[in-house]
Image (cartoon, one colour):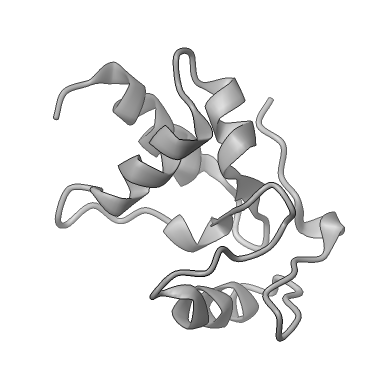
Length: 99
């Protein structure tokens, strides 16, 4: 997969600082020709062996989306110091806006 849009997504996700989160939509807005759904797909198909902080990407409501890895995502975020409620809601102060 040499699509430059995916490379842009991976580069931006890699730039999210520890202890912060970003939404699929904000990442999409920062990458030309990308939708929030495309960001989600890119994270699902990340090339094997690629180390990306996927756990730092959440939905527009600043909540961990309901998926098979949600519990692991919450655990990883808390380990990084992100305030996450038991329902998966992220403290707004943890939002990182690409810029």
